[in-house]
Length: 327
Image (cartoon, rainbow, N blue to C red; front, top):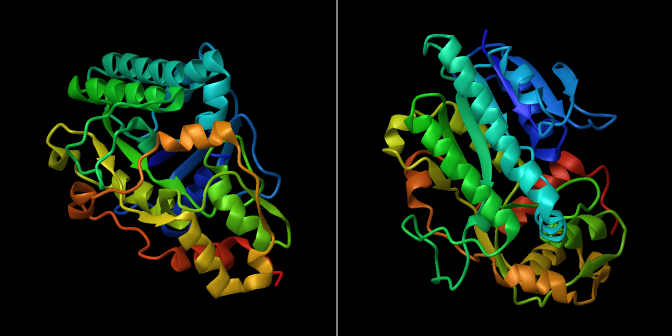
């Protein structure tokens, strides 16, 4: 039996991943023993896994988690982009220093085991590691030059994970996730939250605020795809990465207008009418520094896949997370 630790297991992606692992297991590993770690958990969340509450940035917490010798670690925990931008100290403490403490705990465990303990670590990075000016499509050779604190924190964590892997302390890889859409539940402090909100809220009979122009283009994948990325990464032979341990993942590039048109096709004009335009200069500024389209050839060649239309993304939300559609 393999031990699986999901750090950030109380969040939306962590819950989706845990549910998938409980239903399907990891490829080649039946009945994984799953531990979810987070500062809090949803009241109606996944059952069937061990729940542990704590804060990874606190002294000794990483050491205690690693002392149980998990075989697979999914590191999903972070504060989101908008909060990392407004609370500079908190962003670096949570998004970067926590990764350092975790990797140091793995290094110490590796050394005390005589080098026999080398766990697989899958880290959720972000397309925020890139900054403009952008080409029409970002390929696998485009440089990482973030223009937000969140992006910088993710980029530094990627480099740390790569170096600890190079030294043999862990076997890690970083997944540069597209913006995950449509996210269930309530809006969070991410600057990208509106991409989900303009779909989720109208489908739930609520008004949604659109803070940017409808011409804004962005890179998306569904929560279902996010869980699939993580499971696939856990089974990937990292020797195939040839030392380049960060991957741009597949997704769908579309404009806000195309999102809204997909919503109109699926749910009708009455639902679309619940979207109200109210421009937010701070969000506009942040979004302008984000990439818009990718050519993720490496990840595709390694077997990663995502949706091919925004209609599919909306239908995934309706099928998995919407109790009823208000027309």
